[in-house]
Image 1 (cartoon, rainbow, N blue to C red):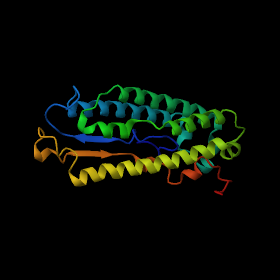
Image 2: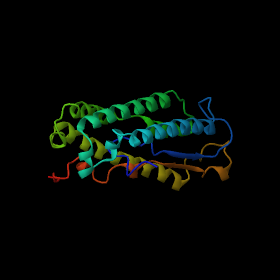
Image 3: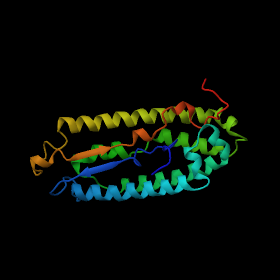
Length: 215
């Protein structure tokens, strides 16, 4: 289990769980839907494992630290951890981009796995700034941290909106309504749970020292 929460990292894909029990061949792709989901599960499980290992490492624990816990780490630890997170993200991005999803799930595939360039830029900029910060107060007050907190809050809302869209598809039972080769009793067996609860409850307080108060 990932300790505490998946703080400060775009982990929509980390929280992804897909159950899709369907028969037949995919449409517009050489993959069947079950083969597609099997491939995604391998990618997601590997990414989750890599992240858990990172968080359990001496420096990686900074990813889930806040308040007084930050005293156990330095901003340079955050830079190192973010660099490793970016490597995990890049591998997921490359692996999912190489998949040609079946037509019925193509839109959802891109919704889940197209990484937001603005968020990634904010993440990378914060990592660089963390490498030069003298302490957590300096990093917390930096423009890079402000931009990152804003990007993370926006990304959290995008995750919630995406989950709502997926839920609506499931509730309306329309996801595969026009796919004649799927037996009717199987059209409802589609479940996607994004890891929106893995985002910090208050992104505006991310990596804020305990001595600092939210403006």
